[in-house]
Image (cartoon, rainbow, N blue to C red; front, side, top):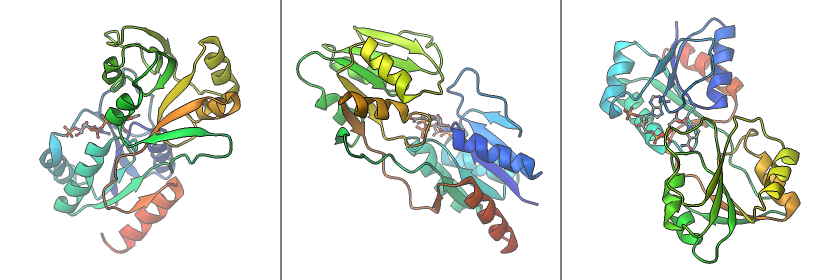
Length: 249
Ligand code: NAP
């Protein structure tokens, strides 16, 4: 029988865990441990880093994992790189389950930057009211542009306040709607949105809201992903599991 390790922290990982539980498959979902209250899951959960590639290889061998599904966030590049290397070393079948990136459509005013430092540099200049839709790990980098007022929206209340001199903080897990985000942007007089190109439905509302309000978006493109088999659909992961099992991988 297959023994599946899902690297999670995303809605895709949770959807896959449900699909596997429904089919009576043996699976464990792994979280990095960044979020205070991860949602309840229908499969066993483990929390915390593995200790680099070597630690993950040990885990895969010790737990007799047969299939590794990397369903981490597209910006979790370190974990994804480790997953490819460890699966290869341990001889475990590997696939990435990830959301397609967002693509600009008519009316969008996006400027693309390759990473967070480039986004910070691009924000030199006069003070603006900025919605910084990034998650708490990266907001402190924007202290290098202290002239702006930043509106932050986090999943959990942070233990320590962000290191930004002028900011407002909203704690909300969503789901968000274009109408709700439009109202929020109007209420806070937002002039610019900074977003990572995460893809997926949950965080897209702010981009639709920006389009409707004619606001510019500074879009941080994804880090390069490792050479690996990639799918965007839970169903395709299930097909892959059965094909790999048939081949005795
Ligand atoms: P990262 O920079 O790629 O990973 C840093 C380290 O965290 C990894 O080397 C690993 O530690 C540990 N780690 C990451 N994901 C893990 C997982 N699912 N299970 C166990 N250990 C994990 O990752 P990150 O960007 O900090 O993201 C951390 C988690 O948050 C991921 O689960 C990701 O899916 C989720 N997330 C990230 C973002 C984002 O924008 N980056 C957004 C939403 C959710 P060891 O080397 O010790 O194994």
